[in-house]
Image (cartoon, rainbow, N blue to C red; front, top):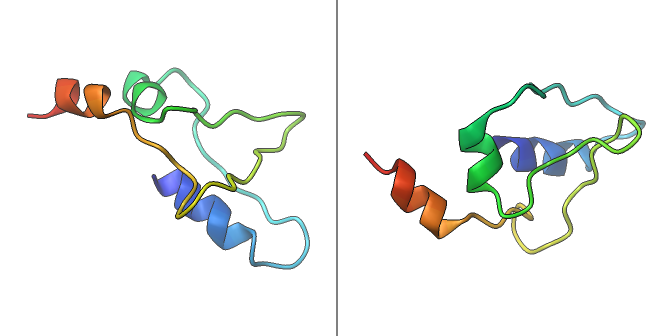
Length: 66
């Protein structure tokens, strides 16, 4: 969610601002998002779905629920 929010904020800024986030394996991050964020030629596409553009996997949320 935080990456999606950051991307939406950066979309409002002039130029080509940077978004820095970890690219190492992170099962929680990779499983929660239906479509995980991935860099394409060193750029991360800004989601264009409603809201933050992020859909969450409710089954994964249930697995991680404490």
